[in-house]
Image (cartoon, rainbow, N blue to C red):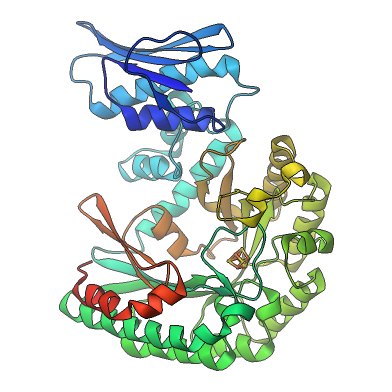
Length: 479
Ligand code: SF4
């Protein structure tokens, strides 16, 4: 869809709002006037008012949206706001329904609420901001407000110079068809496990050496993947011992291990995690429907999930998260609610509800999408799911949006009081630096309101091959 900008150059803001509202269409910039379909965004300034107007034409029909603000002293961010508002107003008549996140285009809507609350605002003023400036629907406002309040609590539990640690284990028992992570099915890559762990230990050592020069308090640790519990009990113990030996974890509030797939879990591993200091694990059914599990390429059943959960309790784990996905191929609103009921019956400390986002790295992307539930069905799953979770005393404590997807859905972490996963909040709200280790790790340095990134190679083979240069960089990184 064409996009022409007149009187301003807020390309990024306009491109983002267009992509969010018309996710199926690529943005093509038009430098000159054009006939036919497209959007023209104009900014003009008078003595008293700055006016943004957007004209959108589709299939011969044109709608115009206008927004304005006081001209004297209008900041750049305010200009971008009225530009987005005018685009949103012009686009609305072309959409089937008002978008749930209104004119918000960012993936981290909670940040707005957190900023408002930390700068002296109240829940009411944050609600007004989401409603009047961004046109967010009531259901999404409640999610963002609850998560914003949890973020403020997390903010007060850190101090200047705190960091978190992420460790990636990019291996899984088999590959799920919707997966877009870099994760290798273990059958083909088992020979890489030991060399990978050796390289990872070297990087851990180099990073710990680097921290000697710039001491930082490590507030949270997250071991993710892939599925870290693809490692044996012995390998998991070794990894956890290495982390405790190399880093000072005395100020660390939580250590999470993704124990995602039940087909990787047994009592020995679950005890090894507990003994190694894991304070939180995540056992992720995604669905409790065996038919849907089989479609996804999972090599386990729902009874394996129940068994793994019971074994985790026996091993002494109390803070257990369970991930679900709304919108899996072959699933229905009724099926999703049955899944949620079964998971709620276990009463885990937290439940994360994702919505399926198909990315190009996923096998499913290239296969028949007809089996996917419609956006309306996914909305039904989420709405009823949110009500059920609230009834059971879970609150949304962090969330992020799926970008450029039909329906513009979000992934939401829900938890019982006191079981917020701080790592998820610090990472999503970009509250402090994240030191990432392992293949695919993205170190994020948050400093003076700016964020810079250093990435490790994506694949285990490259990571093992390049470990010497990765270590050199890690020794020098200044968080
Ligand atoms: S378990 Fe997770 S990381 Fe592994 S293949 Fe499935 S979706 Fe990807």
